[in-house]
Length: 331
Image 1 (cartoon, helix red, strand yellow):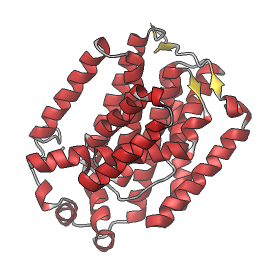
Image 2 (cartoon, one colour):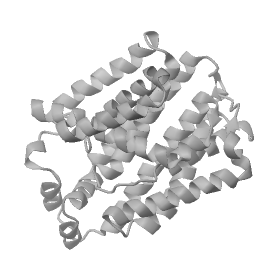
Image 3 (tube, helix red, strand yellow):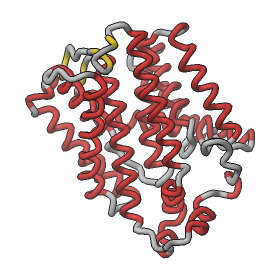
Image 4 (cartoon, one colour):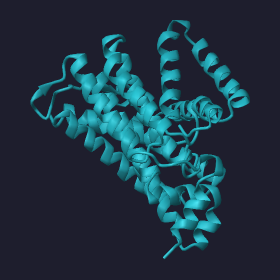
């Protein structure tokens, strides 16, 4: 058996060794979780629910991506493939097969997970730039498949996807009703990711990120751990994409394009790589900027670039990472 104590000591930096608190949350994280839950409850009465649903879908996408890059140290440039394919399959299941939204979302997530098995098995044996380039190449193959496949609708996408009724009982035609389902999916996904990274399995992932040869010497089959993390990340990204397609009633090539992979990288880095709440904040910043600066056209991309450069230069740990370092707490 491998030495779990050694793995734990290896995985957690000295500045981050705090009490696990309640359910794996430190005191600071519990406060942040309370603020997040309060925001989820209050915000639809103040802000536009459709905007909030888009924000939550991308926040879950960023959290799923952060599980791979922040806690395993693997940079994937192909996560749009899982986000987009999850959206396509959920949209097809809801429109062509007439399935309920929750079943359609599960199908979308499962499809992304199966795609993650194949892509992960191919890419996981490489590291660094080689891993990133392989994931990008595989994602481009998925993109061209979506262009040609009959069920995706090509450049038109899948349109008029019905929202249906949750469990076949609660109609989701109204935005407020749909919002509560999306908020529930996001919160469950967020808590699942938190549980993963604070479990013994998560400690092994952190050890692989910090020193993979040592983790291997302690008896862990690191490729298996990395592959499982890749599959989990792909599945949750697929759930995020599937939820987005049900919310907006459309699945298009935009969600599977390589630029979407770039956006999720930006969200994660702006919020804070390897932090629990960072991807949520990063997604909120980027989606809010895209929404409220949309009238500026192409200048939105320029502003995003400026913010990215500023974060890299001034906030090396991201917004939440720097806040946590300032308060000397884990967030």
